[in-house]
Amino acid sequence: METIRFDDAEKAAIVEKIKAYVARELDMEIGGFDAEFLLDFFSEQVGAYYYNRGLNDARAVIEAKLENIADALYEIEQPTEFSR
Image 1 (cartoon, rainbow, N blue to C red):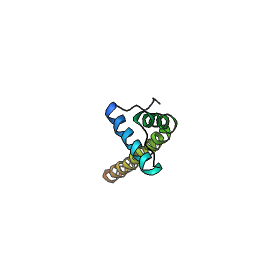
Image 2 (tube, rainbow, N blue to C red; image 1 turned 60 degrees about the horizontal axis):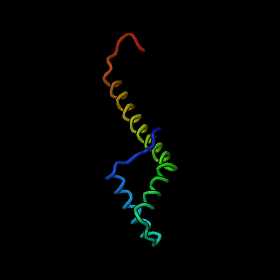
Image 3 (cartoon, rainbow, N blue to C red; image 1 turned 30 degrees about the horizontal axis):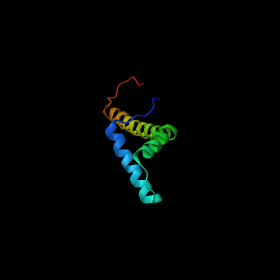
Image 4 (tube, helix red, strand yellow; image 1 turned 30 degrees about the vertical axis):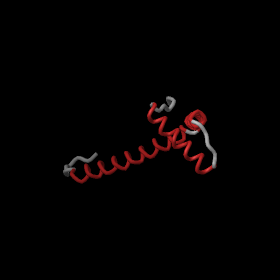
């Protein structure tokens, strides 16, 4: 898996959210550098867990859709003397 990277606008938005969270929940003010450091840490150490959860969720959606398609194909199948 490649390292998860954010463009500058995404990174800036996430950094602001981290700063706001730390201020609100921990009653501490941190700068952009510290918030970016935390973002990098979580991206490297925890990001894969979220990424894999997203893949599993996507896989479940696709499997459900494929099951619906298989059911729809079965419904329109025409009877013949041959069965597979």
